[in-house]
Amino acid sequence: MSTSSENILGAAIRCFMRFGVRRTTMNDIAHEAGLVRQTLYNVYSSKTDILCAAIKFQSDKGLNQIREQWSLTDDLGKKLDAYFEHAIVASYDIIRASAEAADMISGHNSEGRAQLERVQAEKIIALTEILEPYSTAIATAGLTAGGLADYLNSAALGLRDMARSKQHLISLLGTLRQHILMVAEPDQ
Image (cartoon, rainbow, N blue to C red):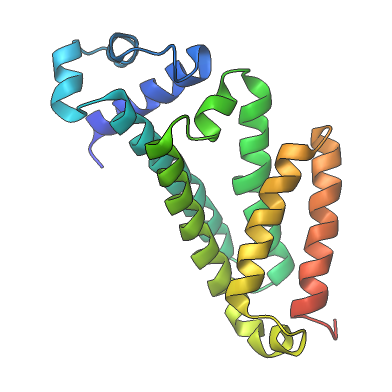
């Protein structure tokens, strides 16, 4: 991704957080990025295109941080902790920091929601990869690594959205972590 695209997406995210997706204009984004509006349109044809690219950019950034931490350990518990920290707690913090953030996190429109589904699918694939070495134990519970990864991602997102506070979220994620470890590493 080019530096100018990163600059635009960073500006768009700041505007979406400040004003919400609905109220943010292409002018707002161009101004925040230090560009004229036509330059912005040369890169992205619409606010929806920017929204989808921003969702992908943020997700890729988080997934890269997760994978980087995963590369440092073979411990499944630590890998789950990294996923929770960068994918769930970080998005919880973003939502709580701005009343307008939920608009972006929810995808705002059908194209944005479709992009969210794609990035969630990428996270499920990544989670499946870390659960694959435990496939035998997971199968004895009547599950597959992919099914458990999908459950893990969906449950964590649900916990994020329903938690009463950050501490409550961390506690709930700790319980989810223990359940996943009980299935993947029953003899530990």
